[in-house]
Image (tube, rainbow, N blue to C red; front, side, top):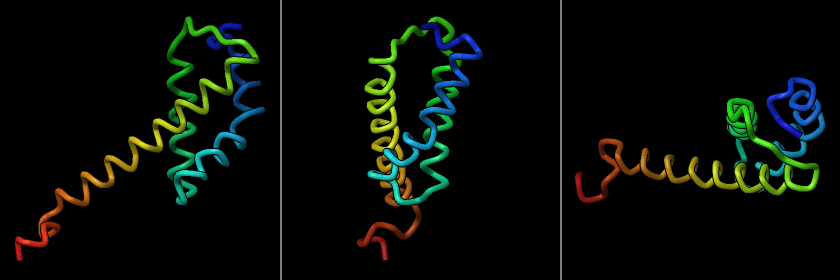
Length: 92
């Protein structure tokens, strides 16, 4: 199935949005951040007009992408916290 088909995309969104938000909850405690990550995932697959998946491949692909996005979120948070003024213990 081609995800760019609006009906297929909407069905995937309805069927898996909550499940993927719950999965992201394994990594991210902030519910709003989890929703943002899952929404960004669906936006990214919608923009890949020729992405073709099967029922068997959609969830593993989604889980991997969500997991990687959660890891990237934590990396950016760590970088942001360390780059804030006064975050270096030796700077005071």
